[in-house]
Image (cartoon, rainbow, N blue to C red; front, top):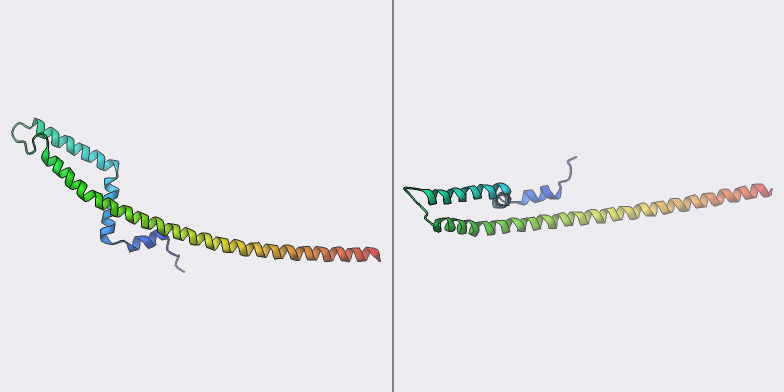
Amino acid sequence: MKAQKTWHEKHHQTLSFGGRVADAVAKGMGSWKFIILQTILVVLWMGLNVIGFMYHWDVYPFILLNLLFSTQAAYAAPIIMMSQNRQNERDRMHAEEDYQTNIDAKLEIEALSLKLKSLEVEKLDKIIELLQEQKSNLSK
């Protein structure tokens, strides 16, 4: 018998190629590795343009660099928002699975509670019966 799929596996199967790409981009851009790499590239860009003796491809105030950052931001923001929307979908699916698990657990607990009550009643009836037998045996 095959194990039932988890909510994460179910959600992962519904992702399109674009969804997986958006999640990967958001994960990459939201990391220290990206921040450090981008900082190194910016420092190199500025340094080479400030101290470059022969060729300045982007002189101060680094208009081309600003254009690159604007373009990066223009694409990054919607991609990150798409990833956040998918995270909301994952959270909703997870909450629904948790809710269903809680309902199933509640029903099982109620069934066990009824079973325990019936066992208690049966035991009490048996104890009363034994006491009555003992009482009748003592009175003889």
